[in-house]
Image 1 (cartoon, rainbow, N blue to C red):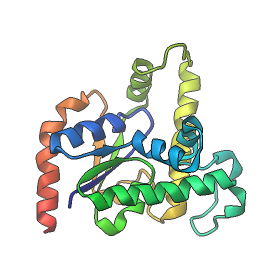
Image 2 (image 1 turned 180 degrees about the horizontal axis):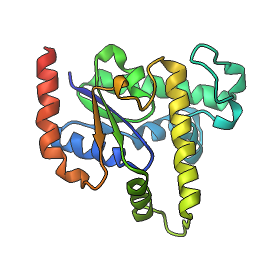
Image 3 (image 1 turned 90 degrees about the vertical axis):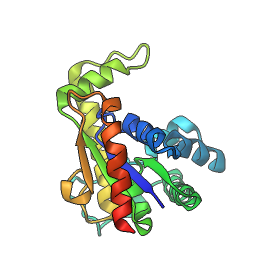
Image 4 (image 1 turned 120 degrees about the vertical axis):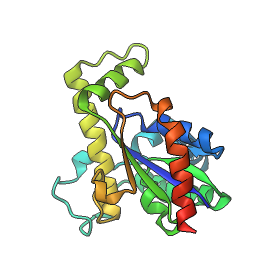
Length: 205
């Protein structure tokens, strides 16, 4: 079974890489589909679920909190239900067979499936450029505001990941492969990445 998880810095293109890799491997990619199913199962608003599905509200937690000091009383019921449903849905996708799962601490949730864990990152300037190119109509963040947003989102992702497992989010030791997308068109990475992934799983047999 080929299970690939994609962790990524905000603006690095990890979502695009996951989708293109899945196409190259001819397997499903699960990303926003997870949000849709969580919202449908619990009757929540999709936009709200998208904000809480892979992070906690960072301001509610001290920056120094350790992975064994989590206080679930600081989470509201929607957050708890979202996290529980998300874990169930991600594991259900993996049970179906080969797939790519983008974000949402899938590398931890699916660790029993021995996934290939990929981390995607890029320089700050490259991430800013990508965010500008993909900005929604009417979205006019200054560079300073966008950098603050990137850092806040990545802080939330790191906090969620590190509360679930000791291996640090974003550290190379926590992943099988780290990909720098700076000054690179992601579509050009896929022809080399597909055989790498296939060889990685072949070596695991």
